[in-house]
Image (cartoon, rainbow, N blue to C red; front, side):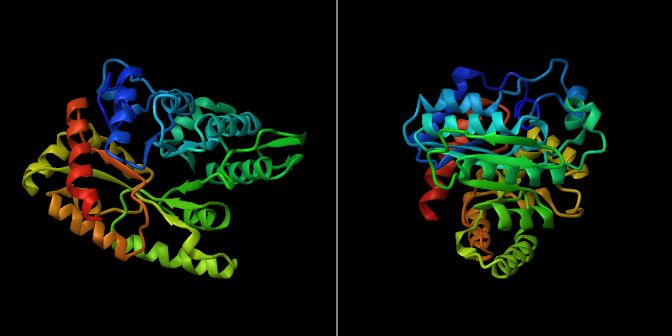
Length: 325
């Protein structure tokens, strides 16, 4: 996510190994990365040089060989940007085996339509939500059937015997997104729902809806992970934490999301909706999130501008927050 939530030249291959090893040492459950293929307009305007967007599946294959227990999730893999769904299924299954069953597939429409249009200029009328939904269904067909066939609006394949299947049965799939359609897709097709930066009251409303949908479909709601992403920034005082957050590239990223992911959350304070403050304030927020049904903090996105700051915040989370949960 270099250039979006971090400055350019933030972390190359060696630094990513350091991050993964430290995450495992500090007993983090997983690390998560986003899926980008080209630079967004607001990033181009801010930085003279383009950032590096590492392809997440290849990156995780490399990091899995450097770790033993750490899991790897895509938060999210933008399915509409990936045209060949059978090749994607093969990559996912291979990664799951080579990592020893440590992969989690988060999928979403992507926050920036401009990026989708850059990759698929002939698909200007495509509906990314429909593309995502068809992607999830097609992947499940490939993962669950010995011989798979699919004839959809966007993807077609016939008589595909894709082996090996993922090592995990089922492969954990999370659906990202803050709107009601993301909740509906998660209940219908996935093991988890992954919104972003959503305050507890709004989360409660969507969790209640997920519970209703699960009952209608005869699904055990308790099997569904409620796994939101939040920005994490802790300092000795509330004011210092807010100041650090607002000086980070993360803040600029959130401003850009007002046109997409966060467009339905006008008037919601970035600080109040995320894990920003003193350690005790953050703990109170997490306890409130647990009360409304959150089961996993799937993305603690650290509001930092330097690698040393990242390591510091990881230690704070591990030593001051996690033991109290």
